[in-house]
Image 1 (tube, one colour):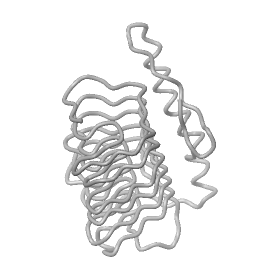
Image 2: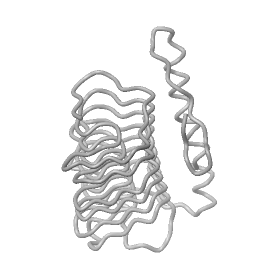
Image 3: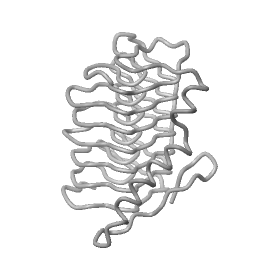
Image 4: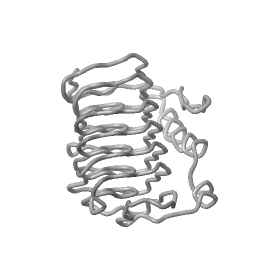
Length: 233
């Protein structure tokens, strides 16, 4: 499905989705806003993302639980970011892409902030990153990744961003890998846990929920909660 404008709020997918290109758990390709959405279902196809295959709009408070395995670009929230914005989003699934691969976005341009990845990210010779593989332009700020990032080309394999725009105020779990920092700061497991973990990130997401729900004119967002290794509402 393509979605060009409007809002999709409090939506989730737990079914298997098969597509040819630009395949996502909530939308194939689209603008508009995706708020409080999550994916638990298996996604197969080209250019796949847990929420969107191609995103030119805004994703806020979204979560992907499922491992994604793709023969092209794969991202936990979106495969391709086209002048879009991703904030307060979380990926738990392992991401495997034969082209670009990222915990939140595989490649593109736009703004990524306050995002968290705990899944392992694996790519080939194209950019691979804990948050985004290749960032042509835009900003990457206040993001966190504790997953293992591996790629065949060290020059485009990064703990937060594989190539392009450098990360700002971003942190990763320090370990022995071939991934570069590219502006990110490594932390020990103890240090990282004091900065970010699943419970802390749910608190961040629910702060956004409270901000929205405080306005009586807004559509109400559901509160998130931890459910084992998932977060749901």
